[in-house]
Figure 1 (spheres, rainbow, N blue to C red):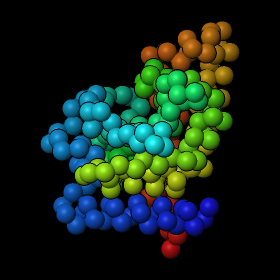
Figure 2: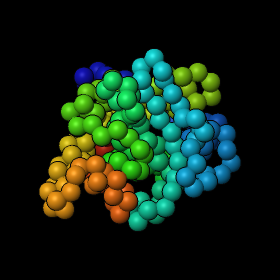
Figure 3: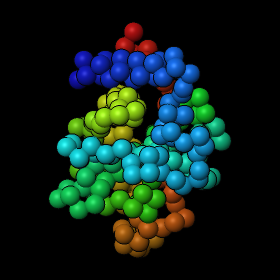
Figure 4: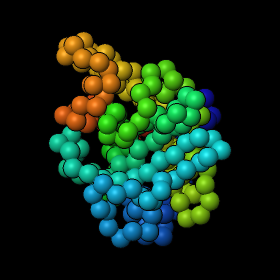
Length: 204
């Protein structure tokens, strides 16, 4: 696993560096050719999809009291749900205006329209996360895939925290899990800040 993380760290740094050499940040590249980030719009419009491995992601931005002021936008990472009935959200990844990673977070179900699956299933899917594609977004897909590898443990913990929140809130409200899952008063359920420099220091 350590070798896999080393390779992921190298890939993440290399992709970001090559974009920087051409005068672009990860945040600007994530807009898939658009010159502005419109609230709620997906970038790219039909997501970056890997049908072979069953994963996808997209980038977008929208207002929320829980999103940090310095956030430019965020990725949402998905896997096909068990039985291919819908999809499971594996995590959100925020970037600042310079394209530096800010935090990982988990959302309530209505935010992405995901199929409710237990953390164990989502964690198993996370272990194989990779999005392979062709074209101008291929390096970005490698970067997102590398980040999922580097932060697998943190994402595991966030998925468990999300499930714990769902159980506790369901019990507190005396409501069905799906009712809580659709509660639009809650968007971000849990989050964890990213110390990017500290993470990379583990591989020096």
